[in-house]
Image (cartoon, rainbow, N blue to C red; front, side, top):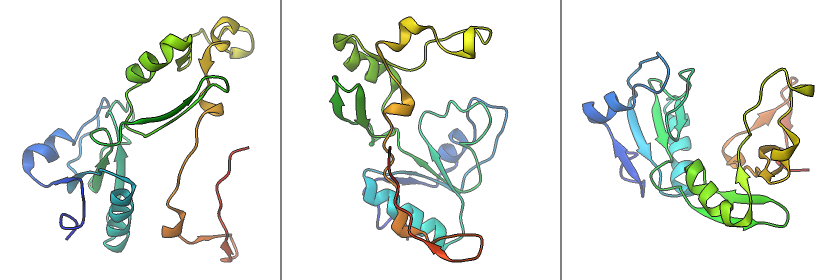
Length: 173
């Protein structure tokens, strides 16, 4: 049923399920299927399908998780194949809009001519205030200042502890 409505790929074969049964952790669990959505409509279709069929949905990109959070016996939605576009770069304000499958090295290649890079600079926990060195912050696009999340909120009903529906509108301050 899901295969007929996706623009992207859907795999049920043993080899694909085996390949996606692991990440960089020690955990191993074969998924029911692997979906590779081509667009946000595919993501919505996968969410609706999983919800209607009470199947867990496991989002995945590179599979470098060290704690097993991208393995499971549900449907893995791997966005690393098609959702890999860098949509917009604002050098002056130091932010970038991108899809979740973008590779860090590819983003930094785009940023390099502007004297920028994405990602924390490594530092020792004993540094003052446990913060990265000041020299790195000047040209770093910080995660907390550059993320916009587009959520499929129309697919869920959010309720408070009393069961009253909440009008959930994500915003970035």
